[in-house]
Figure (cartoon, rainbow, N blue to C red):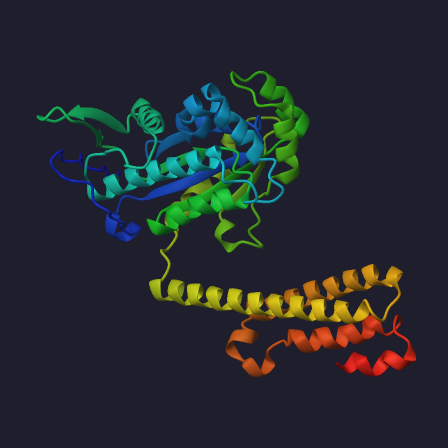
Length: 383
C-alpha cells in the first residue's frame, strides 16, 4: 500500500489542493449521521478496529473533540441543543455549536493540506486553541501525527507515515442536509472520496441508550431532532448518491458488506472539483435570479397596496380582510411560478417567454374582486 513520507520540519504550510490523481494517496470522508444513541460512535470504533491492512481509518468524534466546549461549557451545550430546535435549516444556526463545527472542518482541511504538501501541521490562526488541542490529541491517539520541537523551541506536529487509502470517519448527528453538504464541499475542493452512513434507529431505543452515555443529551433534544432530521436523499441531491441507510436497532451492522462496498466506491470515484467558469456563471445566474424575484416582489407589493386603497372605498368592511388574504395568495403563487421559470432558465434565456407577474396579478385581481364590487364599479377592474 502507498505510504506517505514524513513531512520535513523546515517546510512551511502551503495552501495546496491536489487532485486524487496528482496525489496518488487516496483519501475519503465518510459521514456517520443519525440520532444521539443510534450507535454511530460504536460503529466508528468497530470500523476502525476491523479495518484491513489495506485501509487506514481515522475517527473524528465531534462529541470527543468538542467535549471541553460542549460538556464543560454550558453555553455551548445549550447552544447545540437550541440549534436543533431551529424552525428550519439555517434559521437559528448562527450559534456557538455551528461555529465550532465549522472550526473543526477548518482543522481537518488544515490537516489535508499538510498531508498533500508534506509540511508540518500547525494551528490555523482563527481556530480556538482548546479545539485545536483536542483535534490534535484525537489524531495523535490514533497514530496519525506526533509532536515535535524545533531548534527554536517551537512545537509543531509531524504527519506520521501511514498506509493508504485513508478514510476519515466524521461522527456527529448531521441532522440537517446543510451540515453534511459542508463536508461534501470539503471533499470536492480536495478531490476526496465522499460517502454517508445513516443509522436508522427507533426513538425509544435512542432514548434508552442515551441514558447510559457518559454525557447524555436531554430527551427533548432527541425528540426534537427526530422530527427535524433530514435523511440522505440521493434522488433529490445527486451529491448524496454514495449513501447507505442502516438499521442499527439490533447492532452488528459493522459486518454489513455494503459498508465496505460503499467506502470502496467512494475512493474509486473521488468528487471532482468544480469548474471555475461554471461556478462563476452559476453565481451570475443566482444574482440575476435573485434580482428578478426581488423586483417582482416589490412590484406585487405596490400593486396590492394600490388595489387595497381602492377596495377600502368600494368593498364592504367585512370583505376587506378576505380580499387582502386572497391577493397575498396570488402574490405567493406568482413568485413561485417565477422561481420555477428561473429554475428551468426560461426567464434568463428567453425573455419572450418570461412569466409576467404583473399580467398574472391583474387577471387574478379581476377574478377576486368580481364578487365584491357592484356593477357600477366593474370598469375599474381593468385598471
